[in-house]
Length: 99
Image 1 (spheres, rainbow, N blue to C red):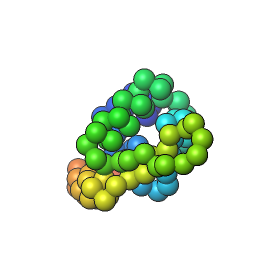
Image 2: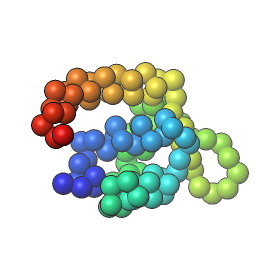
Image 3: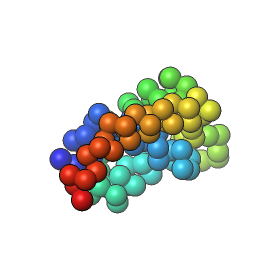
């Protein structure tokens, strides 16, 4: 299963990437292709960005130029911390099975 097929993790992955640095939708798509070997479509990434923005977890960075970039908000940082804790709690006990 590729990252493009793992839509349940897409919001988590995008929020985590944006927490590292401000990114545009195309930069997110490029990074996912580099890391996971598949490039999600704009129709996959941009609705997630819109939802994260609507929920106050990311916000648009005001820069010159046409490309919108997004950064994580304090609420997004809190939400990401909770999501990471849940992810680790859910999957940590499986680590030995994949070693």
